[in-house]
Image (cartoon, rainbow, N blue to C red):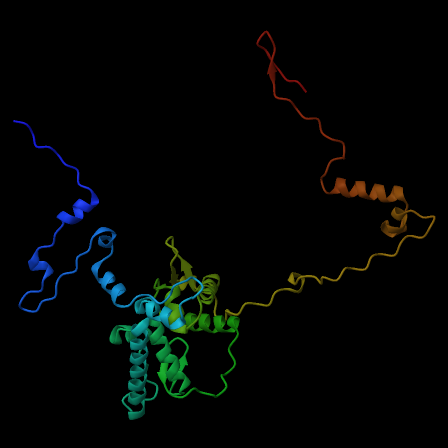
Length: 327
């Protein structure tokens, strides 16, 4: 049996054979619209974009006609620029500000009460940290809350009274060390009771360096001691200093102060005809007297003469195996 002959179809023959069934080409009795038929390169374009291009053809025909700003704003995604999300946050922020201001005005938040922190505002109202900080700034600008260092924002107008002068750090260290020594002597702080830097920082509101200086001063006077684990503890009674020992650091001695940076005056030059050694020697003596005096000083201080010493070599052995010292 011979196989059937294969006939190649031309593009015209393909178009003639690609007939559309009548139930698809003609609308049904129910009034449904016929499905669009797409062939060729039209299949690469999604149907939605193809319908949009057919419904509204582009008005831009050349590169010389750039799109307007309104067209660019419409084509831009709202999620990329913030869009409605930023507007929602702004409205939410205004509601929070009005709510907190109403609570302060009605007396629900009393004078001196702490205002909700940034973290709690974020958790309670589901807003970002920038919006929570903006809420606090707005209330501060309205002069209904004020910032207290170490505590945060509290209810109340800003205080315009001048602050008292701050105590110098060294005086503050002396006061704290004196109070701790009195507590150790009176028994309020028991023997071998530890002291920590963090505890001193929280109790007296001082820095870590100041707390370390307080403990160091107590150790130097005998009121405390160190342990192998770098812990400072209260010293027992037999190690206490004598009564009346001050915890104030004495001022540095005069010779400990740095010298002036101004250059010192040079001695006047020696007159002509006389050597510098004769003019600057002890008691105006001659060069020989000065050399003798220098030699006496060296001999008196235990130094030997300026003659270099001969270096000794280590002992070596000869061919016969006997040890000999070579100088």
